[in-house]
Amino acid sequence: MRFTLWIVSLWPGCLHAWQLGQWRGLALAMAFGVALNVALVTTFVWPQWLGMDTPPAVSAAANWLLVLGLWSAGRVWLRRDAPRVAGTKSNGKWEDLDAWFQQAQHEYLKGHWIEAETLLTRVLGENPRDVEARLLLAGVQRRTKRRKEARQVLNELKEDDAARRWLLEIETDLMRIDDVDSELNAKPENEYDSDGELPRAA
Image: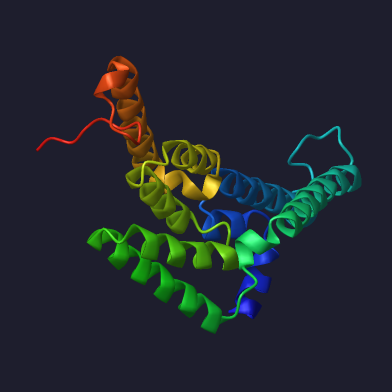
């Protein structure tokens, strides 16, 4: 697996598009592919392709400089995001994290908020960028009336490119929090319970 990641990392933007689903990574990978093809064509097949007035050596050098520039930019970007792209945990550790997360889901569905949050805290302690764990943690916080904390987690997820596929769920949870806040602001103080929440229907 590590060797495969190393091979794929030679093509700038590929890992960002493949592992993180980032459109910027796809754009960089496509730009690099176009630049590389143009450089190959103008060097080995059709040196006068970009114009008869340009000397073939100058045209080829300019194209290869563009290829090198895009490749260098991709390497810098990859080095900056390496922990997110490739991960630093062993396979056994990832299996443990998956098991903890699945158990947290079961506890969440049973309404065992403390147990679910404890497991999610363990997952996020090992992998702070785990999108699904952060989203589930926001759900636990919302259900335990910690709306401010839940809103903060959800707003951070909205800004994270890795959470794009969960954007609908994030927006839905934020709307639920806004609805509760609006109801609380619209009710007189004497209608709140001791926790500052609306009383539940009997």
